Length: 559
Image 1: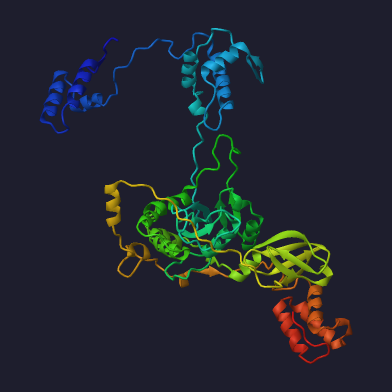
Image 2 (image 1 turned 90 degrees about the vertical axis):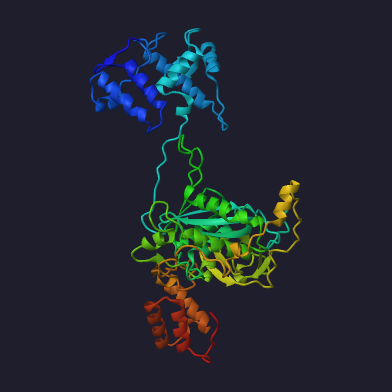
C-alpha cells in the first residue's frame, strides 16, 4: 500500500509515534518531548497532532475494487440462494439447536432441489461452494445466528401500586422439612417445600411464604394469595390490597377453573404467559425477572444459612422468611432513590387500595363444580364426606358445588340452587402423619468436615431476636394509614340478598311456615311493600320475624 500524507505528516510517522507513546506510562515526561518534537518537525499544532493520533486516518487494508460483489453469479441470484439455505437451516432446527450444515444443504440442492413458492429450485453442480455461500450469508445477514436471534425485549412498568402483581412458585433449596406438617398417604414421599411469591410490578415489593405441597397446587396458591392480599398481622408491614392484574406462567394454577373463578369474583384479571412457540421466534414462556429476582435473592442470602440452622416446622420457616422479606422490601428500588416499600406507599391509587374480603367470603368463592347423581337415600359423598340433601333431589343428576376450604355443599339443578348442606357425620381427616425417612449425607474431606462441625452461627441471625437490629428505616406509614376501598361482594350464591322478589316471598313463606295466600290483606300488603323496598336477606328476615313473632299460627322456622 502506498503511504499517504495528511497535512504534511506521513501516516508511517503517525503509526510510529502512536507505538512509542503506547509503550510509555500515561504521565511519563518523555511523552511531552515526543509530541513537541513531532509537531515542530512537521510544522503543525499540538491540537492537530492530537486529532491525527485519535485514528481518524489510520492505514487501511488493501482490497479488490469489486470486494463484496459476487463473481460466480449475479448479486440478486446469490442472495436468493442465501435466503433458501437460511430457510432450510431454520426449518431443520430442533429444540437443541441442531440443524443441517451448509455442505449437506448444497448436496440436497444439487441432487434433488427444493420446492419454493416460485417453483422447484435446483442448483447447478459446482457453481457454489460452502465457503463462498457462508461468506455471502454473513455479509448479507442470513447467517443462522442472526436468523434465530430473538427480537429486542420491551420492558414495562406499572404506573401505580397494585396495578400488576407477578405471581410464581419455586421449590425451596431446602427441598423438604424434617417434620412436614402433613403427608398424603396416597403419594410416595414427603411434600415439597415450595416458595410462593408475589411481586408488585411498580415498586418491586415482595411477599413470600413457604407451603408444603405436592407439585403446583391451586388450593395452596389460593391460600397464599389470600394471605398476600389481606392485611398483615405485623403493623409495620402495610403491603395489602387486591391487584388489578395478576401475571403468572401458563401452568396448572393458571389453568385451574376454580382459580379463575375466584380471581373473577375478586375482580382480578389473570394474564398468563403466551404458550411457547406462539409468537414466532420470540421465546414467550421465558423467566419473569421481576418475580425471579426475589427468588434468587432469598435462596442466596437467606436459605444458604439453613446449613447452620434448619427450621423445625413450616410455621418457623415462614417466621424467619417474613423477617428477611421485610428487610428486602426496605432495600433500594431498582431505579428510584428510595426503598421499595416507600415506592409502593408513594404510588398508591388516589382512592386507595381495594380491601380484601374476609376469609369466610373467600371460601365461598373457592368452590369447584362437579356433576353427580344423588343416591335414592338423598345422600351424596364428596371427597369422602357424606352429605344429605333435600328429598326432591333424590335420584336426580345435579351440579355439586363443594368448597376447597370449608365443609359446606351447594347443589344446583336447572339453574336453581339448594343448600348449604353440612356433613352428616364428622369430617374425615385429610392427612396423616408418617415419619419421614432420613436422607443420606455426602462424605466430606476430614479437614473441611472438622471445620464445619466447629462453625457456630448465632440463632438470632435467622430468628430476629432482640439483640439483632435490622439496618434501615421502617415504612413511612403504618398499615392503619393505608387508604383502602371497601370490598364489593359479588354474592354468587345469593347468601346476602335474594335474586328476585319471588325468591324472597318463598323464603318468607318458609320462615312463617304458612302460604302467603292464606295471610290477611294487611299482612300481604306488608310483605309486598317489604319486598319492593329491599331484597337484603338479613333485613327481610328480621322484618318478617318482627311482624310474625314466635307463637303465631304456623310458628317461626329457621332460614
